[in-house]
Image (cartoon, rainbow, N blue to C red):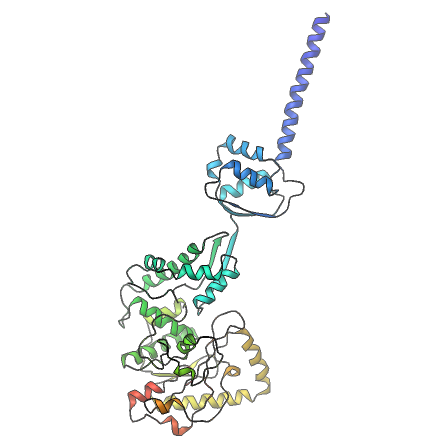
Length: 434
């Protein structure tokens, strides 16, 4: 009898031990699957090819999971180790083990966003990429200007001298930890895809895709109003057809070694292939990137006979077919600007606008009004050059491109070169505010 009692008691104790073991294991599993008590936000990077043991150790060390063993066990039990995606992940702290697995299985990597506006140059884009924390500006510039990358992206375009202007303006979203090459490739590929869909081999005006990009960058920098860009493109194309220099102040700004808010006539004499006051045809590369509206304006320009345009002292321009008509508009610009600058209420608003870095034609950024002889006309084709521009990049505050020579010509000078229509028009186009 005592034997059976002992057997029963022994079995009961074993049962309790087994139940206790399973209950203890269950509660351990439940507890281990919860977030650590001192869980805190953390960012980790799972490298390509990292096995589950390394991932488990990294997660435990970062305080994301309580048990590295349990992480490995579930990976093995469910056979999901090969499905966990590499990348950079941000954990807020407090995620359960199930939530951690879901992040890896769905590839919910931390994202980084960078916005590239229209009218930016490569150094400005590189600064934006650096500011977003992707890579240093130097590394990005070295990557995007790689001849191999440019060649393999712009297939059929021949050998391009530069990637300037070819990083398409867009808001890009990348996984944190993305390489500089992936970013550069995305920006260049975006441009190639968009332009290739619009231009097969040449525009109706005979421009190659790259030449269209160059002209689109000038349109981008010269025009603020979308509805005026096809007209501005037509002015440039008309001048090219007649062998007239483009005389774009935006190209002079690009040629200068450093930014200047106002151009002088000495600036217009800078020797550079980008100086379209000295050299005929298009500059060798784009002078900034450009949006869809600008490339569309070049592909489908307005059909006009305009050869000149001048600011209307607001956001737009007045366009002219002849030099005399252009000169009348130009004098009206000075009159409007004089009235605006003399208005007490306008001064405060103009000062406010200038801080935005987005008002291309704000009179607060126009030249002081002086009457003096055109110094360049003495060494040119006996035609005075007027150069007034008030360009503004769509850029962060305090990054302004605003080239305006400090001069107002006399009526006597305005007729110089009138007997030589081709030369006269070439020297007196007035891109933006001439």
